[in-house]
Image (tube, rainbow, N blue to C red):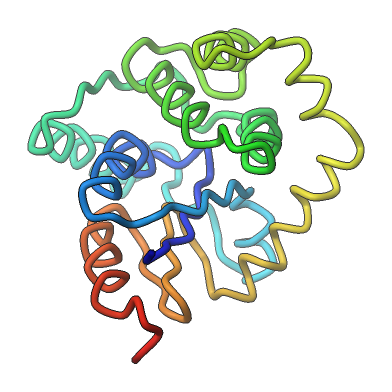
Length: 201
């Protein structure tokens, strides 16, 4: 079955649009998703790239309006969060534990939903616990595993893996050796996976 690596930074704004719909689109297309939580800041630091949307900049103002337009166009619920950026490290740790245990997608969808529709900010204890409980898991147990030394080390190892793939932003989709960046490339990544499932260029 065709497969796509889905690289998600939990502080990423445009990643909400992807997280809210990629699961359904992949199921309809018959594509499997390999969720890859990571931290974008160390990736961009090693590539000498700055923060993608500086606060109070014209670019940031455009981003917020563009997100609202795209959410409306895609018929996705949207409420601008009260804080940006957020500390995504706690969410990434939980998500990476979920990636190892098979529940990353469900956690990610719920954590983003809470952040982008209820202003329950990603990375906060409330967001993490509500998202974990919503998928039927024990929050204390999951948080212990997420904050274990082994899980922390494994998440850090995502940085060189992302750089090796040429990733510089989120969301990013990797299909074989092909990289697709941005929510507006999601459908293209799915189409490529379907047309090149046999590994042909």
